[in-house]
Length: 471
Image 1 (cartoon, rainbow, N blue to C red):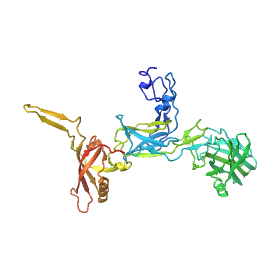
Image 2: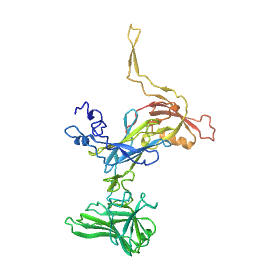
Image 3: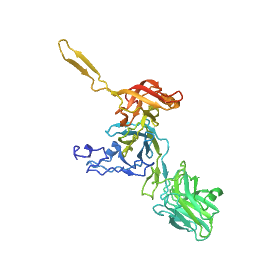
């Protein structure tokens, strides 16, 4: 395959959409985390990973989606773009903003996001019965298992019931893929039609030779059992597993059930001992099924939320979440646009997530774009030689900011006090055009006719355009 006509000439490694390669496998869709959020993103693997998957003939393997994603939602009333991002087992992530002209900008404060929380894993292979009763086996009492949808299920649309014909114990065996060598968080939603005498959460183990080891069990307290009588209650326990266990068998056993008694189960989590036990599976926002949807283990990374107060107004942007690890890559969000909605914002670099709304005197504000030139008049020459800079300076002019109380004035002066550059984002009708980062000089406080008992003040100052501060 010639490079001039192949996939390398058109698109990044492993993210190609040409005829020689399938579409990116990272196209993912989920409900947005908040109303108005984007619901799709595209995964692109790191070039080194993509290159390693390339065959000698130039063909490329489909990139394996590692989980993770990014969603963005404009919040015009706050002047920010709200970002929700996640990536399983990532230790370091970074955010970039891509403008409509294709330029890439680091998101202030998001250049190096250290992820301190662990990715959660649920080793239950059918945690919420949304697909079926696959993997569940009746145990003590030989209960009849049924998948029920009656509007009361605490997780999704379905839950499971186990009904015993005669009085005695009611037990079920749960499908799972718990790894050996660690203790287990066992959590589930339970409801009983009548109070059992005892409820046991049990993990039986066999060693590598198949020899049974002592079962690891936890018995719920009387108060815990009472909470699950005729109502759903979340039960959670830590199971201390024996050393050398290789093959586990997970059971829930309710003893002393009456004839026709029903044990209802939903929302099972089998996880590391450090897991909080709250329910999640592959359909939870940010969650990923490791195998078949609904019938496999699942994981969910920590959810990172971030507010970008430097997002440009009234133009479409995308955001890119990057994982620099060799098996990482990037997730690129769908397009979204932060509307000005009549608001003007000043963003201070020390608190970019919380821009301040300001009230600017409207009208066509005079702006100056200075020319840097040197004029040279040669003796005997009636024409002037001009040496000019390659381009004019950025816009400069006068900014008039209204405040409506003395407290409002003092808060604004505090924002302006340290002389740091500020990001000015204004609707087009205000008249500042492409003005962005500015540095304000002297400020005049002008009451502009306000009475002594009125707190109206106008702050007037000249500004020049400046480069964005590093950060």
